[in-house]
Image (cartoon, rainbow, N blue to C red; front, side, top):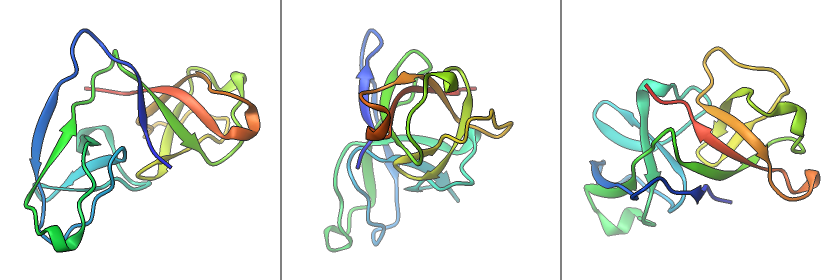
Length: 136
């Protein structure tokens, strides 16, 4: 599954982040910065560590030390997978990740959350939401 940009602000901004040559990354997943290097986001990712959305599949065999990413802007929205059925009562709740492509939509706002649900996407059982990132 992946994180797909739904609404793009006036322009899409791309940037390049450093990564370890052996780090495997998947396109359309959320990246965080750890020790100056891009890695897949985790459930402990906080706003200050957000790197962007990976814009290229990279295998370990590629041995690339940089990755192109889509910059995160508070005006952009993304379609993101959720652990539970989507629910309109979760709109405007702040949520944490479970991994680099899934949001933990528990029905309560998290003080350490990085994603804000805008609205459900598709049927509830599709487990997808339209969301925006919390930004500094």
